[in-house]
Image (cartoon, rainbow, N blue to C red; front, side):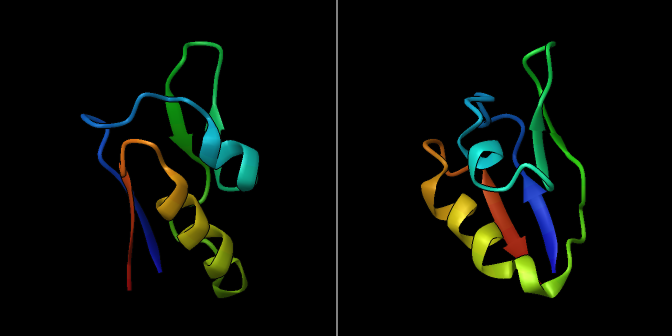
Length: 63
């Protein structure tokens, strides 16, 4: 699984970080960082939740 973020859409609102801080982080510079581009499979449900709940639909999951 690979986490993909469309940074043109992302507003760094940190919804994903609130759900899965071990994968997503919004830093003091107000940019989103993906801490684990290929997270372990056991995190898939949470990663998919992040993708669903992203207000701008900027997150996707590739297999």
